[in-house]
Image (cartoon, rainbow, N blue to C red):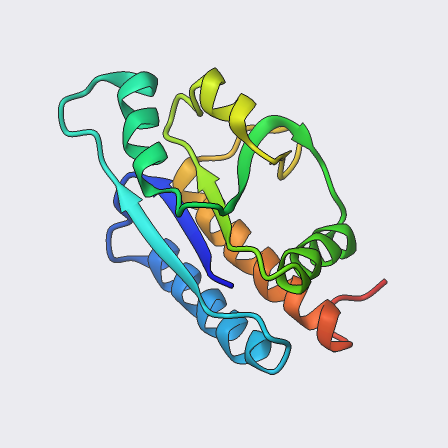
Length: 155
């Protein structure tokens, strides 16, 4: 199993980058004993300014063959953290690669959203796509702690 986070834009050095790195490191340490590999962040950038369609072409190329595609979109389901953890465990148990996708400032192309195995939302509010990386990284770590039976997540 592989876990790839594919995101539009480059995260500059700063507090958001440090937060993403911290949670991904925590996820790697906690997930190791659970059979979860470290998550790898892949950043893509449309330097030509072609909008959602151009970003979609670059994003599609970054999806590993055969991977389950989970896109973050404001219109998606709003799973609880335990539901997210259960889905992550399901991908692990099926030995299926996972690609978590974060669009750019304008979101994801509708055709790409339609291709997803699962569309999830981090809430009904719209979040800056750079901040979504930190929130997703934290949810990956939280999912691993839930699966490990750690008290990090309080129910």
